[in-house]
Image (tube, rainbow, N blue to C red; front, top):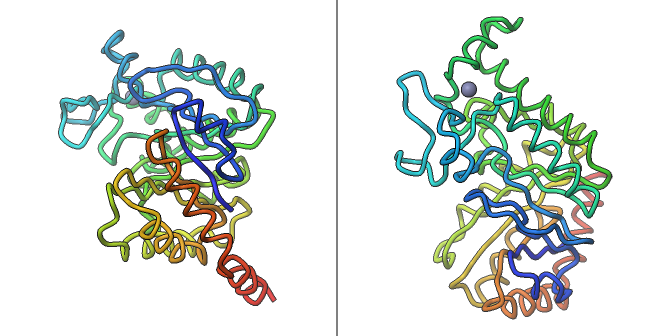
Length: 285
Ligand SMILES: [Zn+2]
C-alpha cells in the first residue's frame, strides 16, 4: 500500500515502506547506480544535459519554441521522442537498470500539445498511415513503452501527468493509458505540494484517475511529496487518498523520512486500510 520515493541511499535502505522508489536517472542528466530491490526511476526524454550537449535533439513546436528550461512552462530540456540515438541509448539503459530491479519511467511523452514539429517528426508523421497528429504521437509513445517492457525483467511503472480529464493525456503528451496498460504494471501520478495547505484538489484528481483507470489491469499509485507537511497533515491526506489508490508513494529525503514513517505507522494502526479493503470487496461484488 505504501512506497517511499527518494534520491538518497540511506532512507532507501531504511525499510520505511512496502516499496522503495529510487531516483536513478534524473531530468538534469544525473545518473546513479540503480538500487537492487528498488523501483528505479529513469527520466526518459527529460534530459537537460543531453540537450546542452546536442542542441539539435530538443523537441520543438511549429513556431520554433524549444523545450528547454529557459522557455516558460518547461523546467528541464526535453529530447524529441523520435530521436533515434536517444531512443536506442534509453532502451539500453532501461535494460541494464531493469536487470537490477523494477523500473519507473518519468518524463514519458511529448513535452506538451505543441510538440514535436522537428523536421524528423514532420516527415515521420507525413509518411505514417495516421491522418491525425495525436494518433501518430500516441503511437510513438506506446511503441516505445512496449519496447521498454520487452527489455525489462521486472515490473514497469509509467508516470502520468496529473490530468485525469478524458483524452487530455493523449492530447498533451501522447499518453494513452488504455494502450499503455497491457505493457505496464502500474501508473503513478505525482500530486505534489510543498505543505498541502489545501487537499481537496489532491482527492479530486486521485478520484478522477481512479475512474479513468478503473477498467485497466495496471495498478494506480499516487505520489505525494511534502517537505513542509507534518505527520498530522500527511495522515489526513492519506486518509483521503486510500479509497482511490492502490498505493501511496511519499517523496522524502533524510530530513523528513521520519514524518513518512510516522504517517505510515498511524495509518496502519487505524482501521482505515481494513475499511478501504472492505469497500473494494463490496465494489467488486
Ligand atoms: Zn521531433
